[in-house]
Each structure stands twice: as C-alpha cells, then as structure tokens.
Length: 144
Image 1 (tube, rainbow, N blue to C red):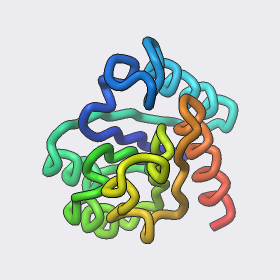
Image 2 (image 1 turned 120 degrees about the horizontal axis):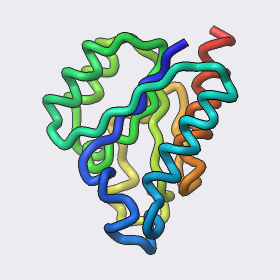
Image 3 (image 1 turned 90 degrees about the vertical axis):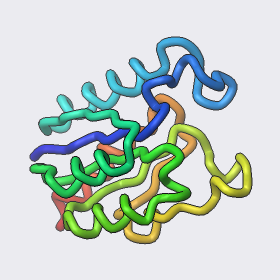
C-alpha cells in the first residue's frame, strides 16, 4: 500500500511562521518524522510532496500512483475548486489534514472545499495530525 502526503503553500515554513498556531522550531520535521514512523509501523510506503502552485498540486493529484492521499492544502482549503475537482477526478481516497484547529481561527478558515468529499478530516492535533490521518486512511483502505 502506498500513501501520498501532499502539503500546500507555506507548510514548508511550519516552525518559522506563526509558532503560536503551528508550533515552534522543528515542528515540520516532527510532523514528517511522525508520519514516516507511523507508516513503518503500519507497513505502508509513503511519499511526501510540498508545492505552492495550485495547478501543480492538481497535476500531482491527477497523476498520483498511490492507494490514498493525506492532504494539507493550506490556504487552498478555503479557495480551491480546482483541488476539489482534481481529487474527485483521481478517484483516490483522501483525508484532509490540518495542523491547527481551523474552527478556532478566523471565520473564513471554517469553510473547506474538500471536507465533504474527503474520507475524513483530521485537524488540530499539532505534530500528531499527519500520523493520525495516515492511520485513519490505512484503516479505511483496509476496510474498503
């Protein structure tokens, strides 16, 4: 089983930007490390990509060769019909993941163009977010 982790814009800056929301130095490394450690325990192969451009993200999604996707689309969560369409076109089950609790933040962050077509949404778990999403996705894939 292969799972693709996709991160949208500014997620490569976790640990540097808004540490009160996303965590301090080393947070992104902790996220990716926990994701890879969980993958090893579950016996699944993973690949991680980070991209700023919406069109490039859509291209990654529709060309993905994997069983499932964990995606943190960043700001595109609240704006991108294109990513929604790409995920639906791919027919690859996915979990939407957010490091922060988007429902405790600005009003505009509470709307997602992906949530209603995702297998599940995992948010607000900090450095455990991606690994929790991975475990949930693997459980879903094994059951279906």
